[in-house]
Image (cartoon, rainbow, N blue to C red):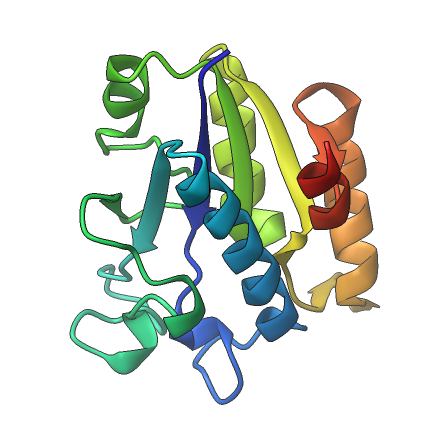
Length: 181
C-alpha cells in the first residue's frame, strides 16, 4: 500500500509568542520531525500543508509575516510538495486530492496542528475520499477551548478529538508506536 506523510500547518504562529499559541507545540514539532526523517529515509512522499489567513477577520497566518512561515523544525526539503490552503480542510480548494491520487497513495499518516480544526477536518475528508488514515496523536497539537462558559483544557480537547476520529475515521498511534512498527 502506497502511503504519504501529511504535515498540516506546523507554522510559527502556533508556537510561543505566536498569534495563536497552542499547548505544547515544540515537542509536537519534534515528533513530526522524527516522522519526516523516517519518510525521507524510506523515500516516501511528504506533503506539507501551509495555511494562510486571508479573510477579513484573519488574526494569524497573515501573508508575509514570520508567524505564517513553516516552523524551522519541519521545513520542507527541495522536491517535497507544499500545498497552500485557506480553510481548515486541507482538501478544500487545493490540489491535495489530485496530487495524492496521481501518486497512487492509499494510506495517509497525518500530523500537525490544530487537532480540533485542521487535523479533524482533513482526516475526515481524507477518509471520505477513501484513504486509510493514521493520525499520530503526539505529533498533533491543540489549545484550551471554551464553550458556553465552560473551559476545556487542551489535553481534554486532544483526547476527545482523537477518540472521535478513532471511532471511524482513523487509527490513532503515538510517534513511538508508529516508528516501531
